[in-house]
Amino acid sequence: MPLASRYTKTRVFVNDSAYYAPLRQGRYSERRLIQFGTPVLRHPTATDRTFIATSTHIWSYGDRLSNLAYTAYGDPTLWWTLAWYNGVPTESHIAVGQAIQIPLKLEVLLANIGL
Image (cartoon, rainbow, N blue to C red; front, top):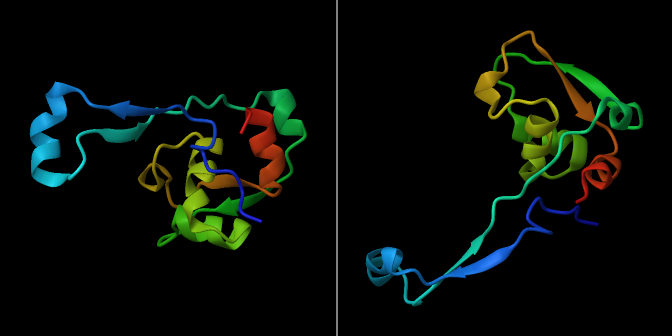
């Protein structure tokens, strides 16, 4: 069963702005662009985190969030949940030897933030 994407409850809108007309003419056959709004995710509170079981992973040279997401959830596209949960925008912000938390039950984590 696939888990929710971070875009599941995101506003979808049509961009037919004149500003993007030159871009659309050169690259798209459509006269408008379908875009996703930026989702706003709240971070779990300390109380929320008591209900989210995690395992600790010590970051080592060559680690990738997508590989950890695949190992933990069977889906490398869920890398963003690990980055978000640990408060790092990208894996380059994680130092070798740093401990990161991997939520074990992704469904519980996503339910806590409203996805």
